[in-house]
Image (cartoon, rainbow, N blue to C red; front, side, top):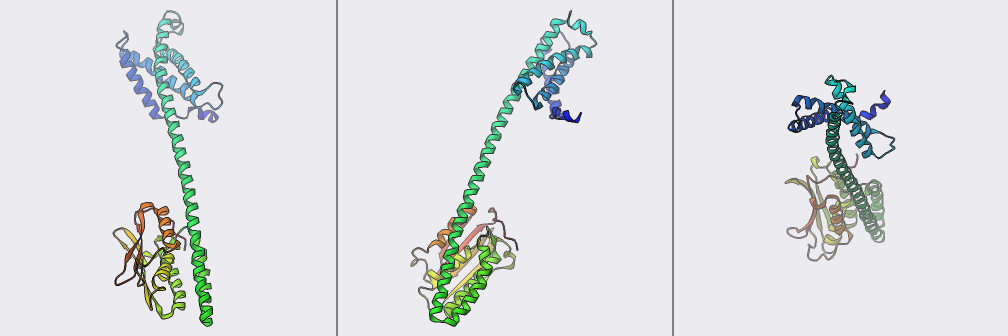
Length: 352
């Protein structure tokens, strides 16, 4: 019997209650046009309704079809009306032979009413099914479009992040080359530090996300390498509260800001300069800033791939919920700040 259980899927209490309500309504309407009592018509309507409901459900759930489903459902309503009429006669204690002889026209009228109400229900069902199928197709198309946009976004992010890696590495290696020519012993120490730094940093460059603490530690190592080249010309401070170190943050953005502060701020102009890195959570926004005491905003004419890349990646990851701002530092220099709304969709934090 279990092998045929699927034929009756959908015979829920809710459907039974709906059919019962329709039968009550049908009996209330037709009682004005016949001599029968309301109770007599209600018994007829319930027998027709329940029988048609069962056959309609079976016709809907058939797996192997000779005719289209809506045709099978229509035939089920006609057969249900016929069997429901026979069932009505049995419930009311009438003889079946009498039904097909003396009460034949009454049986046809009852069947006609059953088929009419059933056809109306079938029309509503087919219309709702068509609307549901259309809505499902729209939802599937929207999901496919969203997946395609996600794939395009991931490809864009991978391309932008790939631009950062050689840019960062070539600049760092240029610093080593400079020391080789001017201070071979210092170049050796710097190269050793660089190898240790790259061993830790390179696996993270291609991650989708890291944490504030990791980015701060990488920035510290990066600044240590540059301080070996610049000596007393470069000082830095790092202020990152412990509570923020585990917050998700996109990789290589802070390094780009630090590199930009050195290359376009302190290196071109200053006998000595400072870089201050600071992370704070204020007014529902995570703020990660890099302040330098270099030339300032006006002399900077194009800072290469760094800032443009950061803005593009922030827009791709967070839309309008994140931004990069540049402001004048006091008494001189620039403050570059990445701001991310607390309610922004988070990039997944890297493990560890």
